[in-house]
Amino acid sequence: MQERDLPIDIHTNKLLDWLISRRHCNREWQSQVLTIRTKINNAIQDMPVHEGIMKLLSGTYINYFHCKKIVDILKETEADSKNFFGSYGSKRMKDWQEIIKLYEKDNVYLSEAAQMLIRNVNYEVPSIKKQIAKCEQFQQECDKKVADYGKAANSVRGEFQTTCKQLGIQGRRIKHELVERLVELPAIYSKIAGNAKNLESAAQFYSEFVKFVLGKEYPGGCIPLLKYLIKNGNTSTYQWVHKEPPLSIEEPPLNIKFDDEPEDDAAGNSGTIDFGDDTGDSIDFGSLGDADAANIDFGDVTLEGEGDIDWGGIEVVNPSAGDGAGTEEIDFNISLEESGIVVESSGLEGGVAKGKEALTILDNPSTRNTLIDEIKELANALVVLSPTAEDGEIELESFLKIRLHEMRSSSSGDLLSMSLLQDAPTILQLQSTESGEKMLSDLQGALTDITDQRTQHLHNIKNSPKYVDMLANSLKQKLAAAEKLVASQEVVRQRRSEAHSEANTLRPKLKLVIDKTKQLQAEIQQDISKKYKGRPVNLMGGVNTL
Figure (tube, helix red, strand yellow):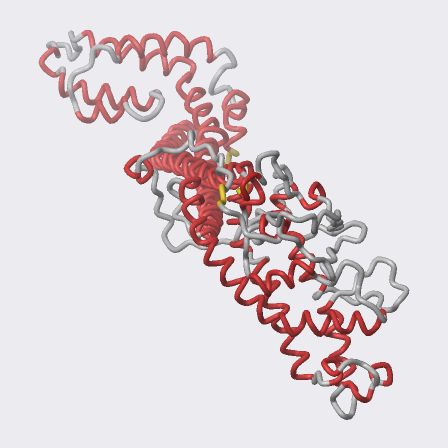
């Protein structure tokens, strides 16, 4: 193999050192380049209009090889200035020819080209690629955030919609709509009172059993308020307390402030939001701790002391009678403070029911909680069933469950097989498994009706303005959270769009830099090859890695 066929392999990163070590360039080339760059900047200010020159001057850093091409173009555009001796009189041509001479002195152009190649390969191209990759990664993150924000917004909207549906409102003017739903309460209470009549047999069975076990009437009577509801229906609290209907009823005002809501429907409709078919989990407002305990409590109030009211054997004397009968003081064994009933000084004058006494039994928080306790007295577990029970907590549903278990375990299916009930009253002995199951089912149904979540909401709305404020604020916070999530979603979309635009701008730039770098590498290889009698030159690790 001849010497001219032997390739010269040079690593791109070592190219500049290789040129200096072979004395093709000197180490002070950078100071010379500064003078050349100044002349180039001045020369490009006065250039003819030519498409080729425009391409050369745009996109990349101008080097020696660009200058040679510019001179070739000027030979065409400045041909008129060429004199008899072959030189050009054009200042443009003279400026660029001088620049080329300065470049060729000490091979400064080769040093600069080598440095440009190294910079493009090691820094410029990787930097642009990194920016594009960063933009693409940011777009993926934005897509994930947009999806997360959308999912969260739909979830919050679904919760809002579900709660509004549960409350029977549209969510436009929340407080107004909540108050409007109060018209449903009388029908709901009427239904509960009507269904309570189905508990008469269970209440009678329970009372007889307690009387049989204790051997006497239960002190204060068993479940007096429930028995009253079964017999008289949902009367006013006044009638329950005083044993006579009032001449008139003056219910307390709602005292709900609507200052933070529009008064007209047009203003209300302007804020309507279409939530589509999104659904979500319902919101439990039953544990709002700041509301009045008497208003928010759904039935966990327990009676203290004797707790029950004994009406047995008491003759209520008509106060209108003129004789001395009825002057004996009657002890009803009830504390109005404990029951939550407030008797105003003028509330009894003329038989007018005012304040809490004007509310019905199911509407009054105190009597409602008492009624729930009495139903639970029929519904909770039987702890003690003996004549020595001190607190008298004999509760009927568990009582019925135990009786049903005894009936099912009996071969005959009735109570006659139980030695304890051999001498029991007829009503106890005639009960069967079927009748016991029916009583238990009626009892559970009544408890479900009175503790229904929507009924509880309506009850609290009527009796606690603070509860209305908290409920309305909670719903409004859901809307505000959904709107904030949507706004954040739009911001992320905008940022994603900006990143997408930036990446699209960088891709053509990357392609241009790579193409120019390949061209520069080829020109350097050809120039070095000329210095070594045409031997092939290979720059390793250059554009091949791009």
